[in-house]
Image (cartoon, rainbow, N blue to C red; front, side, top):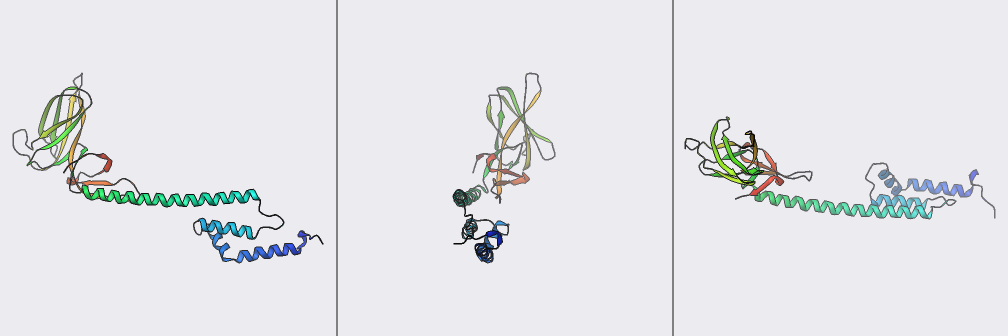
Length: 241
């Protein structure tokens, strides 16, 4: 039996070249090549086509190494697992968006309490807010100003312990007259040992008029009445009626 010289276009070399040319014209190889070059995403089907084509057209004088073949199978298994994980994450994301939509529909028209210094007030009835007192103090006061910066009312809360301390405004000014409805600013202060004024955070009610759902999976925004802007759902301290 003659030994074929592969360096001189032998019969084995011709057979190998013929096989490679045939595989090059094969539609499955073209499809896999497009995936590998970026014409489409390299999914599990394209990956498998490349692997099978590689096995079909391997050099008979230098066949695929067993270790490399096992490594490619492991890559294929990893790709399959990643695709399954992506499907699961997409399903969870879809369910989360549906849950947010249900939450949103229940919040529209309701009153929520958030940390802010402004509130749209219906002065025909009393409103309740709170002041975050960081430590026990001898005096806390809340100055209420209208949209033009005029002081309408000053509430003296007296000595307060640490914590969220509530106050009530009856909607009247310092002269006892009912103030017009509108947006008011609430500035809470106390004094330190040196007699200097120290600002305190206030939490006030606001009405939710609409909800904006994020298209990128972020937190939904609550749009508030009276031009008070928008807040994140996580900023709500209390949900009222």
